[in-house]
Image (tube, rainbow, N blue to C red; front, side, top):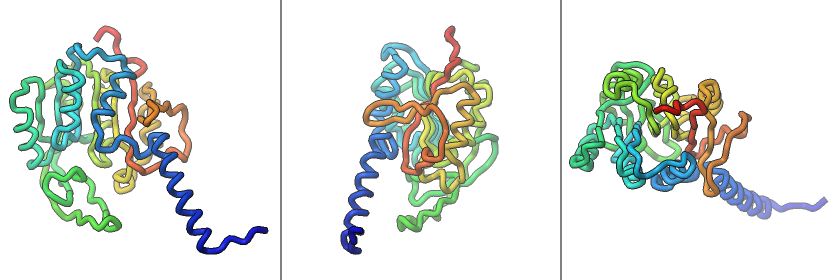
Length: 261
């Protein structure tokens, strides 16, 4: 038997860890973070969308508007509704899109019910802001900043403000509360063509798992794909190896989207 010294074992372990990270990225695990234009282009190709069409999009967790700006660049005629509860980010969003009459900024957080909640974060307007009190001591991040916000069930907004119209895209990036907001879509989900959502470390804090998303979307007749450097990887079935908490982006496509939209 070949004897491996502690030094060689540590060296081999580090190399295997680097290889594991590279292979994970090519599977889409941890890919596309902070690169919204690539996300939108992948979406565009998969849906066969026409840049000149007047689509309807919803950006949930708009932060400072980079994703919405990417949507506008790829789809100049898209009507976009942005939901963002942070007062700091709301001011920035309204300033950034002041002259765009087709972008509507809503200062509320989406959830499965209407009411009041606390937005937790490390700094004002942080992209880490969440309705969950996350524990990030292992990253030396203090998560003690609090802001009172209002929550809204999207189905209510869809009926009242959007007049129950068909939606081409709903994007969720709300730091672990995506599943609650999805449950709040109600009947709007059946009239939504595609849902993009993040899954990652935030889901550890909210104790939600990819299994929850898998059953939610498959029970509502959606196909699920993971975004990767080689394109969209279809998730044909659930297994425990999908529970990877590297922040990854997924696309769920409605198999029964109305053809007469």
